Figure: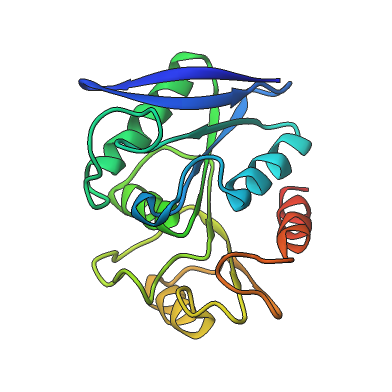
Amino acid sequence: MESNIIIECGNIKLEGALQKNTSQNAVIISHPHPLYGGNMDNSVVMTIAASFFEKGVTTLRFNFRGTGNSTGMFDNGNGEQEDIRAAMSWLKEKGYQKIYLAGYSFGARVNARVVSKGCDIEDHIMVSPPVEFISFDDIEKMPSTGLIVTGANDDIAPSDLIQKHINRWKIIPRYEIIENCDHFYSDCLDRLKRILIDYLS
């Protein structure tokens, strides 16, 4: 059962959903762009959460500032980084030792900025980082990144441009390109889940 939680980030209150599992490992899952309808109930976010939960990890989904019942206003990916850090602090205060960051689309971009600046995480997973839609050129390093997934038909997160960034970051993550899959994972959520389950195994 998921429980509704509130995470405080300065004077902002973020609504979240926590599903406790048996281990002291937890994942924070960041949602797609709120100005285009993205929130913590997005189907890709839910699929990522289900995959982690199946492998024994506690899951935390939450709405960025200004989304859903979270207070504050959209901040173009800047204040949203503080939202991620507040979620990490919240989990650590609850005793979770190892924290994973997983993000989809805009959420992957926000996570990437947090990771590039340095943070204490177990692993970093990007699903369809929107490299064609938002520039990633300001991100010079991407430590702790173990898995990147995109669709072969994803024009917002095109596989060739993602590969150029992987080369530039000098990292060797597992890199999965799902055939006949677009940015929204239409009819591809089961394949995404299989990749995540296999990776976490």
